[in-house]
Amino acid sequence: MNKRFAGVLATALGMAAVLFVTTACAGFVGHRPTAPAELLKK
Image (cartoon, rainbow, N blue to C red):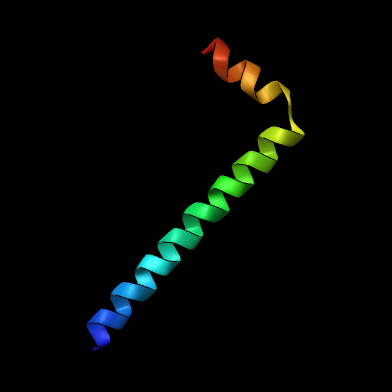
């Protein structure tokens, strides 16, 4: 039971981390319109 709980907890934390990073990146790019242009140049 502990292994299953740990797996569920890890999955939940992983999803939360991905969601947080995605939101942070979207907010960062939204606040800085020059970021996409610089990425397109590369």
